[in-house]
Image 1 (cartoon, rainbow, N blue to C red):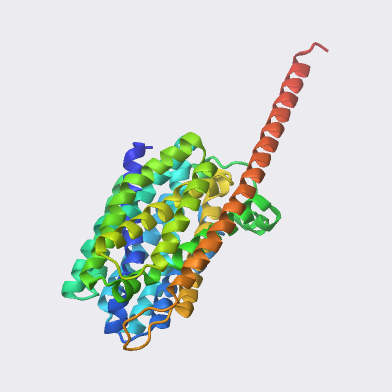
Image 2: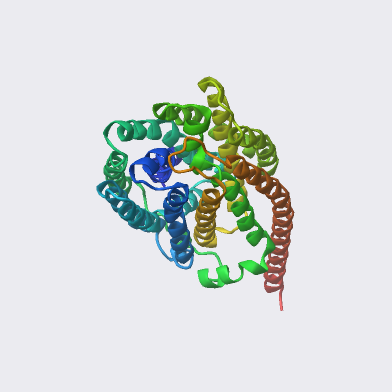
Length: 425
């Protein structure tokens, strides 16, 4: 394959457009509620329409994704995603936008899992957390560069413009990926012995390490995405931000995580993924509680709080993703990561709906109520995830030791048979 760095940067660019499309809807919440005449519950459904659809398609794709060249499957999904994003910029009402978001989510739901599977196949295990940190820095780039630019277009020309620009960039990026990324089909050409995708997924409930990894993912995502959709309305209505100042939140947070995410990945490779996740997860509790209870305060103080939220809550996803990828063999990694992505998306959708119920914004009012409730939920779910991660580690160690023991026994038997054949009759 071509240079690891070139591959990682290409995948990071693809992730940038995908994440940008998913994220831009949330800081536009206050604007969309005003211009489309919708309430907080309808806005939460708008956010959830993408993630729930993405979850369903991710679940379906898990049954066959490992049967295809990962490059071809990625390009198929990415092309559909690009079309859906352009449609989001063409529509002009709530019904049209939610329909376009469903279409975009149907294809976007398998992009991240395919990217992670490609990274996991292409990058050696001892450097995998670093590789994932580079790819996941696309989140930071989307926050630091994409969102401020997108919000500038939205606030000055209309909320449709970020989607039109993003759709055009995605089309160009798809062309670049097609001509640059080599085929990724080693899992097809040299498959490991094992069961097919259907049998593998059907047997996941029998393997504690695997279903606990999926549950662990669900807990983290719920705690994360219960908070995110209403950050912008809360900062504008309760903390005292001007609409244009919202770009500073994503600029500061994005620049900070561009610096920290790759370093968190290297840190996790050096001292252990489980240890680093535990430290980051406990540290993330403070900004979750501070942000969801923030009173009217100077902008610079609020930016310290939101920047800490981006760095710690986003940073904990680097070692946690590496932990999840390590519980599965390469042959079924695409299926498992598609299933994991499905769990992430559906959990994010449910979290958005729950947040829409807990958080209220009275019609014509200028205050957000109940945001502290989603912060409390985020803390509880994070603490449970920390406990469950420790269980995954125990099962993972047992499985690795068992595999090593079986491999050693097979090698000894093979050597014994070879010795018998050499003995004279």
